[in-house]
Length: 638
View 1: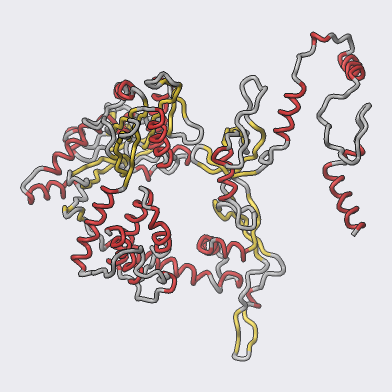
View 2: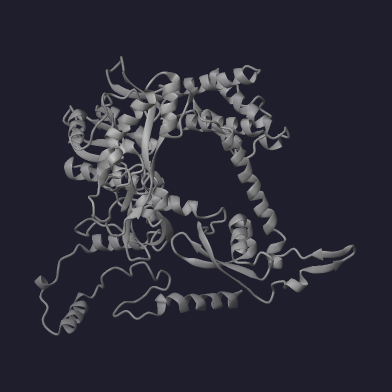
């Protein structure tokens, strides 16, 4: 044991050195605690000054050196050196794309004398901010919670690093790999195939840019479909290590796709009982059959707004260099209030050369919205919401595209066949959502004076004072084109924002709902304090109405008092052996699970466990699983 300990010590000393044997001028190291005071200034002031004179080859006066608070500086350096997140390699989002970076240092104040934030055992209360360096040399700032979340997401239960596979880029085999001639071995009843993956490795590129060789057995377990597709694409699927499993994997994929196609084909084109057209010609025909002009008005309303996104080229004028030819079309929908809606969208999928980071656009989280409501109540602030009309069309596009006018409804018959360049962020283009987000961010920062929140980039804040002249912050929440402002005087902010973008008529008001959640202001009868309440009542009533109609049409009845989400406390979905659902039942099951998930988002956490369990069977549920979803709605009704 002693020899092993000495060997281990020697290996450590070779890697990081031995502090006990280091040379320090006029400093004795205590072998029992060699690291206690290694950052403190030497007690021999004269020796330090002599060293300075020799270094500068001249006299050094006290006023030539900057003064520093030794104790504070040493504590600052010690705090940073002892930070356990420094040097950690972590996957973090950069411009919408995950990249692997290294935590280099703590962020400091502008004068460099203090570290930003304080540590806390609760990550949500830890306010430290770190500088993270990425392979391209860029440095970004992230808070502790973001770094810890990424570390947890990218490690398994044993603490070992895992990653997101970007792709398989190469393969290799060694002498241990089974050769094709040795694929079958003799057995008692003839020949038997060798079942093994040994001798093969695949070169994997990870999100973040790093690569590593992974044994085939690990890749088969982690991502069998991608591994099988790579083998077929590179002509190695007949190798013994692949041939025994690749075909079955791809056959399973094909069966899943065929089931999906069947389910899609059975959906039809009805919404709320109204037939939804798939083209302008069909919309005109439906208006004629129904004896109204609802679809025509919807088309005219959309075209009046969207024409600004196109700029017709004059005869002989060329398209900009690098512009991509794409198409466009009109899609149709029916709103909850049965209003017909038309939307002209671009065929952005045809423009393949769009960087990933330009297509990413976040939205405010529901947790952040709830916190803003809490802060508004605590600070005695009012709340206004508003909806921006044709939001994307306010921004310039981040990609170069042009179209050929195919129909006379956009610019008239005389311009059919003409070329037009797209000058606004048109719906359907890959970068439009990000273009709008950047445009709105510029308005909020440059014109309204708001700053972006570090924890949630779709929360903007600005120092202010409330009605009691207390120092508070005003907040703006952004969810694409839905705006929520919390302030003692939110109307001036909304009016100023409306001078740059068009707010929808009658959309600016005190919220009664936001992002599907019911919102209501209450005043305490005891002390007169104001507070906000949120609930999922409206959505739940509509969901129950839809499910009740389905049950009536299908002849489904649910028994019991509905005291629990499942029909029985002993029910286990993994033990259900009822027949598999057909295509129509599958669509119904997926729709109902989607509604239940949204109810959980809105606050009905009492059904989270059961909904999570049943969500595991979305691809191929059984009839018993479908019956349990009905029972969950039965429970919600009671």
